[in-house]
Image (cartoon, rainbow over all chains, first blue to last red; front, side):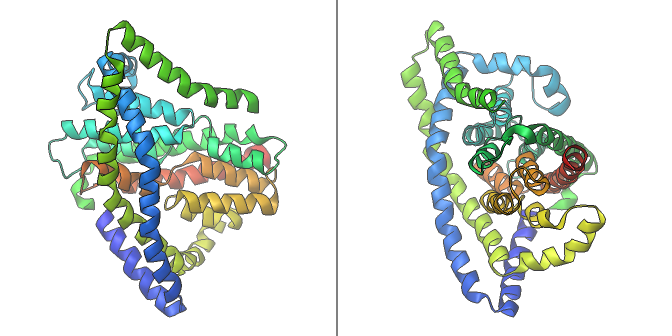
Length: 196
Length: 177
């Protein structure tokens, strides 16, 4: 899937760029995107190290097990494949909590950690397991109670009621997450190999 | 309200750090050594995701810079009008799954043009906050563990984005219009 999307975007973009006479912009975009990627990685390495360190302590203190237990009723529905009390569930809970609180910089490292633990349970290491697909969709559809970035933007723009969009955001994000989880379960049943 | 929300965001991280440390100390964990042992993996993850990010960002930026995105917008416009989506936010809906910074830029433009408390301003804010950058998250999460076949997850993620936008339009029309 990603393979096809990738080359279609690039080849399609180059052809359309040629027709539009925007080859200079395209060529700048190609080089700049590589530089931007390094900046993103550099911004991510610090929080990544921070949360991996804290999570290691949480694991040694068996806190992740406690979180996994609390999360059990939901986990049984969303991730039936994960054995109970598995550390992956602890990381998933931490990632979802960070997302709910609008702590985007912390949610990403915790999500990557959860993915690593899901990968340990995965039988085919090159193909995403059902649990990995579910976890990804929950993250791409976003689960948030506090949209911090948007709130900051609205405060900066001098809004008289910056928080007024919290309710509508929670409604929309709940709808998108539910739709994503349902679509994911349905597509998994229809056998996913078709999409590769 | 904004103060409460700010307080939650400000307190969350220090409280989490404190809870983790206090629990570990009572269980006699050597917290300093354990922390650095875990943190050392951070660099490895960064190195591992770089190729996936370069690949993804390159495709997205070519797609935008070439005008292919604008072309797609023209094709989509009649459909979105039929669905009742205001044309001002269609570029945002299309860009949101591709690029977080670009879509935030659009929201910021819309807010300064129409005002943060206008219908368009509120709708754009809701749309930006209610979904994530699907392609970026997929490249990052799957890249970090070397997954090559994403199976049905991208399609499911895009369905979620689409439903999220429709839900944002629906609820904002209901509440703010």
